[in-house]
Structures are given as C-alpha cells and as structure tokens.
Amino acid sequence: MTTLYTRELEIAQLAVQRAAILTKRVFHEKAKGTVSKDDKSPVTIGDFGAQALIIAALRANFPHDAIVAEEEAAQLREDAGLRELIWGLVQETRLEDVGAEGLLGGGVKDVEDMLEVIDLGRSEGGRRGRVWTLDPIDGTKGFLRGGQYALALALLEDGDVKVGVLGCPNLPVDDAAPLAADIGSDHQTDDEGRGVIFSAVVGQGATSRPLGTGALTEGKKISMKTVTDMASASFCESVEAGHSNQSESAQIAQRLGITKPSVRMDSQAKYGSIARGAGDIYLRLPTSKTYQEKIWDHAGGDLIVREAGGQVTDTKGQRLDFGVGRTLASNSGVIAAPAGVHGQVLEVVQQVLGLK
Ligand SMILES: Nc1ncnc2c1ncn2[C@@H]1O[C@H](COP(=O)(O)OS(=O)(=O)O)[C@@H](OP(=O)(O)O)[C@H]1O
Ligand SMILES: [Mg+2]
Ligand SMILES: [Mg+2]
Ligand SMILES: [Mg+2]
Image 1 (spheres, protein in one colour):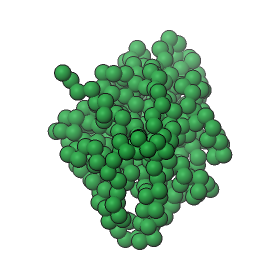
Image 2 (cartoon, rainbow, N blue to C red):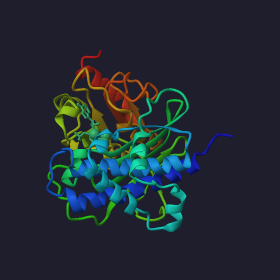
Image 3 (tube, helix red, strand yellow):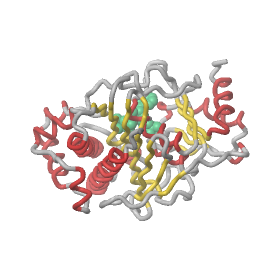
Image 4 (cartoon, protein in one colour):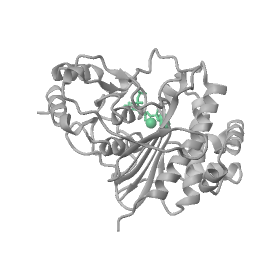
C-alpha cells in the first residue's frame, strides 16, 4: 500500500497557517511603508520567525527528515536585539485552536534552540530519502508592499515532490476571484476575504481552503481552466524584471495570440492562481546564465499545478528536477500551463528563445 501522506499534509498546512499568523502580524505592526530588505527589516523578522515556527513543527513530528530552507541563523547569532525580537514573536504565536496547536507539538525551548531550529534547514537536499523544502516568505518584495507573498513548504521523497503547501495571506479566498496584478493594488488595509492555503498530495489532486488561525477548515478541489482560445488566455510572470525575461515573454504571448497584458505577481501565488483557474499560464524565462533557481521557490507550486491538471517543465521541456541539491541546477526557466496547451506554449517559447 502506498503512503497517503495524510499526516504530513495536515502538519504542513497547520505549520504554514501558524507561521502566517506571525508574518501577518509583522506586516501590520512593522512593515507598512518599508521598502527594502536591510538587516533589521520586517521581512527579515518575518523570514526568521516563520522559518523557526515551521521547522519546529517538522522537528517535533518528523525528526528524521532532512530540511532545505532558505534562511540561516548566522545573522541572528551576531545580533542580540534582532534575535530577542524574533524570539518574542515566536513564543507568542499560537494557533487559536488548542487541539491544532497540540498537533504541531514540540515547540522551541529558548533563544539558542530557536537558532538551532532555524539552522536545521541547511541540508544539501538530493535524490535520496525524505527532504522538506521551505521558503518562509517567498516574494519578499510583495510582502513589503502588501502584495502577494507565500509561505511555501513541500515534501520531497527521493527527489519527487509528494506534498506541497502554499499559504498565500493576500490572495482572495474565492477561487473564482479575478486575477489582479500586485503592483498598483492596495491590499494594505484590507484583510477581509483574503488568505488561502493551496495544497496537493501526489495522486490525490489539489485543494484550496481559507487560511485561518485555528483548526483547518474544509478544502475544495481546484483545477486549471481548459484553454480553448488563446486570445482570452492570461499569463502571470514575476514583478521583478531581473527574475524573468519580460521582453521575451511579451513576444511569446504575442505569437501565441494572447491579447491580455501579463499579470505580474510576486511569489508562488502565481502557481496557486493558475492551479485554481484564475489565470492560465506562468512563464519564468531565464535572465542570466548564472542564476540557478532554488528548490524552495518551486517545489510546492510545481506539485499543486500538476495535481490541478497542469504540466510544469523548464524551457527545454524537462520536468523540474528537485533531486540535484538546493537548486534546480539541471533546469532553466519554468513553463507552467494546462496540460492541453503546454506543448503549444513550449513550442513557441523554444522558437523565441532560439532553442530550436
Ligand atoms: N536573479 C534572479 N533570478 C531569478 N529569481 C531570483 C533572482 N534573485 C532572486 N530570485 C528569487 O525569486 C524569488 C521571487 O520570485 P518571484 O517570481 O516572486 O519574483 S518577483 O518578486 O515577483 O519578481 C525570490 O524568492 P524570495 O527571496 O523568497 O522572495 C528569490 O529566491
Ligand atoms: Mg522565494
Ligand atoms: Mg524567501
Ligand atoms: Mg530571499
């Protein structure tokens, strides 16, 4: 009998939900109006705090699993003020539901233990065994401007994504809500109707549910839209021009006959948005030969899109390979689209990039 990953999914979702309580609090109390990620910036506090809370839950429940996470504690070891600030937040953050909080177990003993917990995320990853990958705040720029960001957690087994969870505090709960660009939208004063967790287990489909503050509420199956007419399709890409080549994506859209402008959004909220049919295609085109994408920026989204009826490859048409270490060293770019049109999109991407 195959493993159902029921417990992994539940713990991952609750851990993400709890950490989102911290990131939202940090945003409301500290982040408004801040624009950069300097040493003491709110996003730094949110990054470390969320990483500590999520890894503490993984340590208590799955003590033998390896973890590949974005942040490491070195900076905190140097800075007592920052360390104490984060420790205060970590201690105070609890799920409202006592049973749900109890399921997460363990906890963090003291400041030193918090640093150790953060550094449990330093695994090199690889092809063997169970490896969790975590981005405590994906889309740091989005977080700071009150736009899209995600708490991203996934479980790999022998290099394959088995469980993916994306907590998106600023996306609409409603799967049918229209896709909105990050820039120019003002989410900063309005939490109502926002906050969603996307999740998927391999072979079991993808789900969305409201991002609450207590026990998990019931999930709904999500699926990608079937694209029958490219003229009305929509595509998402990064906000930052340095993260994806936007002049090439514009040419690709034009050749495909897509008439709408791209929706530019930070973070893996892009994967969640196309998985629930709010958008159709996610393009991330390499901007430099040297930057290697990180596994925590894609693992959860990759599984959620594939389980919702999509295909995810790089620009060479190869599946993303999460088993080569902390980066996607053998891939280049990302093309995520409904299975029915992925081949057509890939073809045009390869023409425009001169790959064929
Ligand atoms: N040069 C370069 N090229 C490609 N990707 C890069 C690059 N530099 C950073 N990153 C990673 O991009 C993550 C954010 O991706 P997004 O798609 O959200 O980008 S954007 O913020 O919307 O522009 C971002 O994740 P976070 O650090 O978690 O925000 C980075 O891991
Ligand atoms: Mg990231
Ligand atoms: Mg991050
Ligand atoms: Mg970062």
